Amino acid sequence: MARAATRAAGDDALHVGTPDVREDGVLDDDASLPLVSIRGVSKYYIRGDQVIPVLVDIDLDVAAGDYVALMGPSGSGKSTLLNLVAGIDKPSAGEIRVAGVDIAQLSDADLALWRATHVGFIFQFYNLMPVLTAYGNVELPLQLTSLSRRERRERVDTALALVGLSDRATHKPNELSGGQQQRVAIARALIADPTLIVADEPTGDLDRTTAEEILGLLARLNAELGKTIVMVTHDPKAAEKAHRMVHLEKGVLVG
Amino acid sequence: MFVPLLVLRNAFRHKLRTTLTIVGIVVAIAAFGMLRTIVDAWYAGANASSSARLVTRSSVSLVFSLPLTYAQKIRQVDGVKEVAWANWFGGVYVNERNFFAQFAISTPSYLDIYPEFILPDDERRAFLADRLGAIAGRKLADKYGWKVGDQIPLRGTIYPGTWTFNLRGIYDGADEGTDTSTFFFHFDYLNETIKRQYPGRGDQAGVFVESIRDADDAAAVSQAIDTTFKNSLAETLTETEKAFQLGFVSMSEAILLAIQAVSYVVIVIIMAVMANTMAMTARERYGEYATFKAIGFSNGFVAMLIFAESVGIAVLGGLLGIAATFPLASTFAHTIGSILSGFKVSQQTVALQFAAALIVGVVAAAIPAWRAARVRIVEGLRAIG
Image (cartoon, rainbow over all chains, first blue to last red; front, side, top):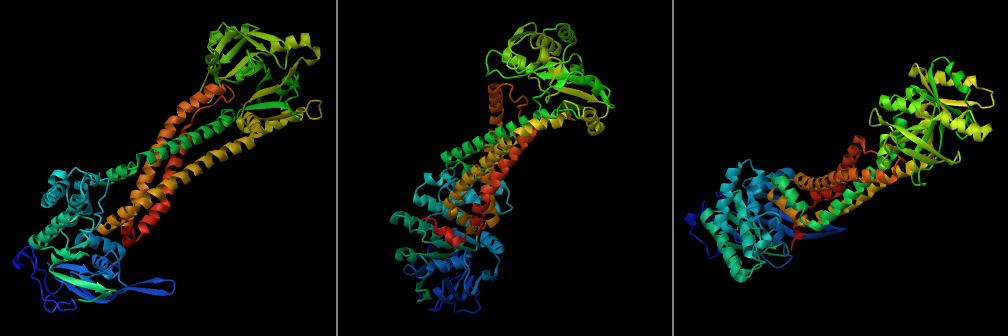
């Protein structure tokens, strides 16, 4: 699969180089351990006596430091695959390993703890807490850590500065534009220094200019901070920013 | 501070809804407190009764009086320390709305048997020395603005004519439970007047009150008194003062049960209203709860947020309701006058009110919290957008 042309920085800026990938999305280099390893994953729903397949026998690897765009038409299962990778849903069959941990085998409580330390979420509609300020929203994941108030403050200030919202720290979501809200959500996704950032249509609710800003920010996170990003998008322009694109159709990887 | 602040901000996110819910709880808790206080007031007389006092009345009915000569025979019963007697007067002060209890009492024996009526020595002497003298409880005197030396006219309903008494003393209660809303005057004055006007109706007492040497002997002494008058023309029924008072309460038992039932129904109604509010609140926030869970917060954390918000609102409403009960009770007591003499919000009622508010908060949150904790993250996230 061709790599996305628009990497924000060279390979040396990433902690891990981008590995070679086969057409089916599985890493070619056996010696290179992928950050995310998906093997034989299926997901189906049962309605009455009807089995509705959503994902069928998916194999996919994502290397550390990679930036993957999951693409496909509506109902192709891309968001479901993202949810499985992020540990907010469980597969009907197969194995999902993230940093060596088979997350499909974790209990709900362990999975919650795992998500807190390993996954940063960016949602289409930002999903900020309306009663909290930008600062409070970014600080949220840190409430699950044992960091002191001062340490939390330092981290939040840094994250807000990174997304260019230091001057909006005290603003509530309804006092921010869509792009600013998404930048707060990105800061929140980053704050706990997760292994993986998952983004579900991060630009789906934004105009083109703002979408470009957000995509630029994600590219910077990947290039400068070496963050591994898996992004679901409909938008080919957004997908171009990724290192590689993975296409899904009717629950099957097609390239 | 993160959780309390989050709960507080969430609670007042919809200010109107939260305010209306709190107002509902305030009204319900205050109403609950008022109804409990009414029930308590009904039992106040019985609760304040001494176990070392007996009351003897006609075994047929309280309407029938007993010969005054029984006093001497009762006094001779083993275990009886002192005997006094009283007659219900049933007069009207100015107009029928001014109801209060009036008794013609034997003096000084009645006052000796009721040491909880605290009367200054000079006023006691003045009362005993004046055949037309009367004493009134502090609450009653305060209500009508009476002062010692005032003349109190009562229009008799059982004993016709206008009876004018000289107020010689105002008694206080030895403790908060003592009734100070009764008016007492000399039995001798009533008796002599009746004998003069209606010769056949004299020398009759409504009830005899006995103090006994040992409260543990109450049953035996009661039986001994009644045995004394067995097969006479006016057989007696003797019981402890508490049982006598409860006899009056039992006449209104159905009403009291209804009041108690209504007090609990009020709580159940507000519980349903609160549960609806919390269910609506939780349903609106499924997306947020899913986001919390996606970030790594536990199901328990989400449930705790809902419980804390619900209990917080209920307790705030409960405390305001409790605070509102006192002025309400005071106004109510003032309005009804001395019909319910012990109308006071008790500590037990306050504790029950607080417990009711707490239960409302917990019960109202139970199902929404359970649902929010169980909602799958992917389903919750679909609620946004």
